[in-house]
Image (cartoon, rainbow, N blue to C red; front, side, top):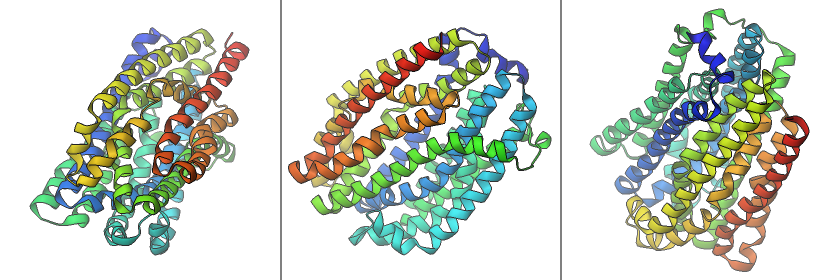
Amino acid sequence: MAGRNSQELGKRPIGRLLIQQAVPASVGILVMSLNILVDTIFVGNWIGAIAIAAINVVLPISFFIAALGMAIGIGGSSIISRALGGGEKQKALSTFGNQILMTIILSIGLVIPGLIFMDDLIPAFGGKGAIFEPAKIYYTIVLYGVPFLALCMMGNNVVRAEGKPKFAMTAMIIPSVGNLILDYLLINVLDMGMEGAAWATSVSYFLCFAYVFWFFLSKNSELKISSIPFRINIPLIKEISSLGTVTHSRQAVVSVTYLLMNNILFDLGGEESVAVYAIIGRMLMFALFPVLGITQGFLPIAGFNYGANQYARVRKSINTAIFYSCLMGLLIFFGIMLFADEIVGIFTKNQSVVEQTPAAMRWVFAATPIIAIQLIGAAYFQAIGKAVPAFFLTLSRQGFIFIPLILILPNFFGEIGVWISFPIADVLSTIITAYFLNREIVKTLK
């Protein structure tokens, strides 16, 4: 049964297959996003707006380390999907073994200096003034759980590469639900404040790790841990790294973006402007869940069929994924434009933050209907193992366009210059991606 599941990626109708893969991925991302969203609401209402800003300062640092697991997971999963498509199960097992070793060594290797230099890192990412102390409390505890999160992110992508989207979905739901329950108990009932929020997060990471570890021990997996050769394979590590670098570079740029945004906004409007960005950041994670879910569901389909030389199915998967994603993006756009004021009121009662956030949020989501083209296009090159175009297109939006814009436009337009940078970057990066994706389809997928 397990073996037949991965082979279905090359047989079932693309539309039905994409729904089968994307719906569990979307639900998992939705639950994870709801967890972050509700966590922010709890913190904002039970601790205060400064606590929201503090968590926003810590997230890019902890996620940068944890994203190593995601990078290794996505890089290795591209190899695994193509290996399973080509009938090379031993290569898939060897790839997974190297992914585990890389994730453990690299995540722990970054957590240790992260704890040693925390007093320098937190202010650098915007943890200044009243934000510093709560950010330090949260950061210290959360970093202990980051290696478990890295292993979860890596393992979750491998689960999806096997064609097991429902198990991947469950892996995202368990820590999300656990975190919300622990948030309520530790923050509201036991009144532990930022420490409670941090421990709830770290324990939830461990719960996710425990589930993923169980999956690879069980009969549900084709890549059982008991069958894995834990031997370092340099060519595989190089291939995993070249493809994974795309994902980790993106997270590195995200972390740099948070660093710049928090500092720019702190200089323009103080702690409250940082809180505005924190709320918008949570909405970006939450509202885009169906688009991100379709992108996640698209990856194993494209990779498997490309490995099996079924190029017509690859073309159809690209077109179907873009169509459904753009449709979802359009619905998200109208939802934000119509209900931005009501959404912001849920997070905090701070009047200044409530007044500033809706207009900024509308600017940030202004180009949502077209971002699917950029996401699917970049994901396609990663799925088929073409690291250079995947790297370029993945970084085109935030690295090459958005960061220069937020460094330049606020000098002319003030804080509004920060917010209009979002749709400008979305439009330009989408045009670039559409060009390269179309060229690749015409050239390769005949």
